[in-house]
Length: 173
Image: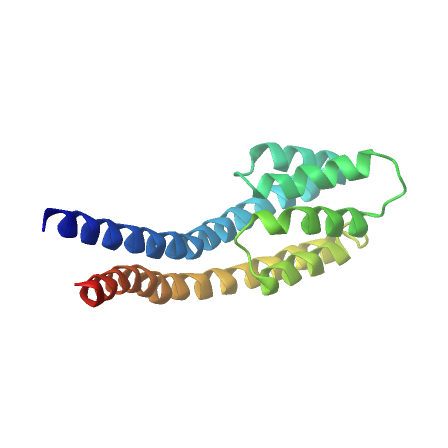
């Protein structure tokens, strides 16, 4: 009898932990989108107002950004400074491709980031400002969507983890 109680508790704890792990992806995506938003604000300041060159701006933003997000900016800096003939767009795209698999961002988030890089460094100051305003709007929309998914699916994953554990215990008893 005592073994059944311990075994049942262990099953419920394990399935609940799995549910929490799945729900963490939703929380992490929201955190990364907010961090991206702040990083782009830093990049805008570095490029438009501090008048730093793009590689230097990428390096500085990379040093100030949060975990995982900073790798996109620092890798772009490294690629640009490697002097292998990459354009800004190619360096940005390559940095995103290298780092997106370690992040919780989805395909739509990735496309937004890639599209941002297509105009980065190629246009005048007014168009750069428009490019930053566009990325802010897109990231805000993605944040709102991520917030809703976190509220809806995060609770669902947690509840399902516990309920599946209870169902397994009931079936085996």
